Image 1: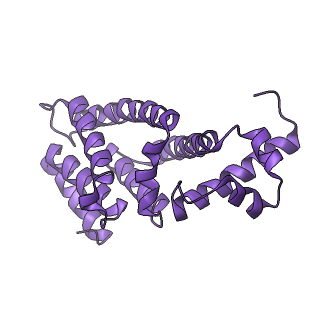
Image 2: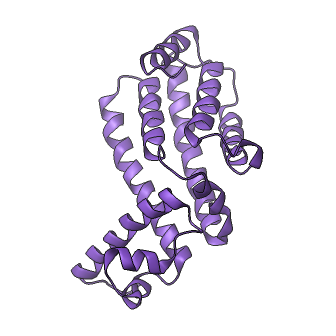
Length: 208
C-alpha cells in the first residue's frame, strides 16, 4: 500500500473500527462493503482505495484486534503479580471482547483463505507467548513441571477452533466454550496452590 495521507490514515482507522463492530454483531457473510461505506457516509471508491476487497478488510480487523491485545498484554504483564493473575486478565479480556459476538462470526472466518492463513499465524504466535507464560508459571510453583505444555497449548487451540466450527455446539456461546476448555486445561496442569487461585477466581467472578 502506498504512503497514506493523515486523512486517509484516519479514514482507514474509522473503517476498521466500524467493520469490527459490524462483523461481530452480524458475522462476516451478512456485512457487505456497501454497508460499511453507508454507515460511515463515505464512497465505495474511498473504501476500495484503502481495502482491495472484503477479505483485506477482515484481515485488517484481525490485525487491529491483535495490536490492541498486545498493548493490553504489555500493560498487564507489568501490573500482575504472577502468571495466573495474568491468565485471569487474559480470560476476562477475551470474554469481554466477544461477549456480544454473533455465532456466525466464528464460523464465517473459514470462508476466506488468506484470513485462515492470518489466523494460523496469530495462533502460532499465541502458542509461543502462552508457552513462555506456562513455563514461567512452573518456576513460580503454579503449574506442574512434568507436562508437555507446547502439546497442551496446540491441542487446546485446536479444540477451541473445532468446537466453534461444529454445528453440534451452535447453541453454545464462545465464552462458554472458551471458559470450559481453558479453565479445565489450566486447572488440570496446576499445582495445589495454582488450583486454589483458579478456584478463587471462578468463585469471585461467579463462573462456576
